[in-house]
Image (cartoon, rainbow, N blue to C red):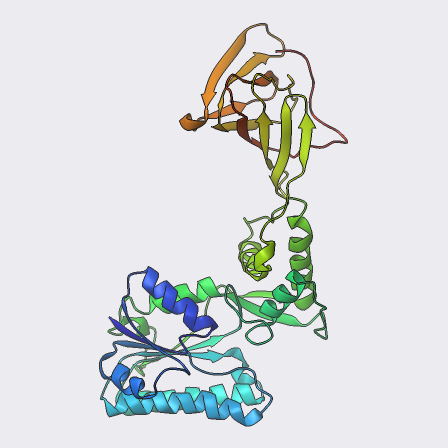
Length: 378
């Protein structure tokens, strides 16, 4: 398929172009403000599908909205009609069409023009009324309040957004892309099967849409910022938290992606926490020096998984109420996980000439105020 994307360098357009390419669509006509206007006529001669994303949603001059949002639609449709191309057109509108403001009025006028074009030509039209969007590559202080919040919090800038209890409807750019690309699966028109009157147009609502108060979004983002340096990550089983967190970290200053771990020095080497989650699990890194053995201990409830990623050693076990000892020989190149159950005394010995590096998962984090550890010898 030959796909035309107007507004290809904007937030939605850039994500769409990369998603299309990732799914194997190679003939993509990218049209934006810096594209030679004559190219539009060439693109509309043989394109099979049109994503009309071009437009503007922020301006101090109210007249710019109508001139740009309606004007770009008029230019596109005129070019399609000139070339007698009835390719389906997907248009990104806004939930603000019902709001009496210059932006909403301009998008509603573009919608009406598209519906007239559909009646005149019989071409298929998809109208997507989008809520506030968020995700990677969204421009702060322009596209989305979420982008501005992420940017300001990540860069320690002040927040001043009026009523903190205003409700915001949000859609994630990844969900928008999935919805948009679904329309390519059958460009012949089966996507309009719900149009019982055969009118040839389709209002499409992106799902899911998440609704939060502004202050709730700010609280989540501030928590991400604070927890990052405490080795905590959010509960990614929550779809919205996962998407918001993935968005937030794209706004970190590029020279601040890194942060140090805190090493706990021990007689055999050291241990460093890497990740903790609200579900109370933890991942850490233990380094055992050559010829050294970690302190033997066991747990009442805590269990773990050990993965030696570098070096050679022995992990020894003895059930606390028995005498028999079991040993596992471990090597970094084997990439073998060893379970550490509760009630088993265990230790790690470095048999090699280099540091033994072990990645350790625990089902709960280390608690210095109430450690679940008992220290007999294996």
